Length: 304
Ligand SMILES: [Zn+2]
Image 1: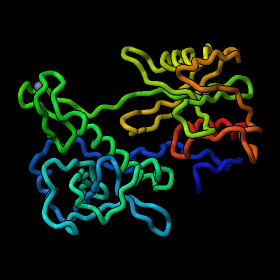
Image 2: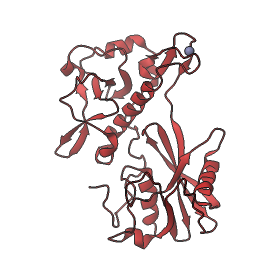
Image 3: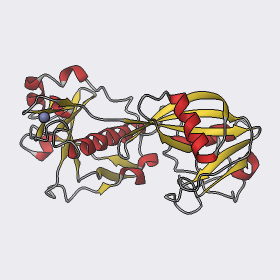
């Protein structure tokens, strides 16, 4: 399996629940405030630990492919520090993230999550995504946005509290819309200057304050390619912890096909037919197999 492979797939890659969803984990939000229970789990030899190096995640190669490296606390010895982040329960065992900067886990392969996302079992990809998102959030909220004093992690790492003014801050998720626009039997793909060579994808952008999702879709498409849309239909969502987005996937029908590309945002955009995208040598490279963009495009390709 490779992210670059094209040609007609049997079914869309990355169907819902999309890669990086955490449906298999019981998050146990009600237990995060139970300090005694959490302290006991941080000493429990059967608890599971996900060590991390910065934002890199622990993975081990097995015969079937890469897997998340979860270590029983008993193997590590001792207990976890209070700052260990509680992710939830996996088959009744508590899972903690241990962000380690001091090089204590040199024997463990740490990788960028996106390099293995589409190769991991869904459960593992979800756990690692959740861990990465929370570690990133903690690293950027060490100080209070209201008074500037230090904050500390409470509730198993799901709240940061300012001891000076009492402000509580919660993990942040930024909604972004992503849309496959079609006109008749063609779909619109665009290319950002940040993309790898040859890659084209669906249009996307962040939702702004006090903006509905459908309005964000219409605004982004109008801004980037100057198209007005008819019907806009929600499809599905994907957590995208790079670093902290939630991608809200849509399909939309354009009212005409004339593009006015904003070259500050897009290097190029064009309409593509199914036959050319499914050909042995397609004119463009599609986005990664772990992305909702790939799913939206392939779902449409297989409808024809
Ligand atoms: Zn404060």
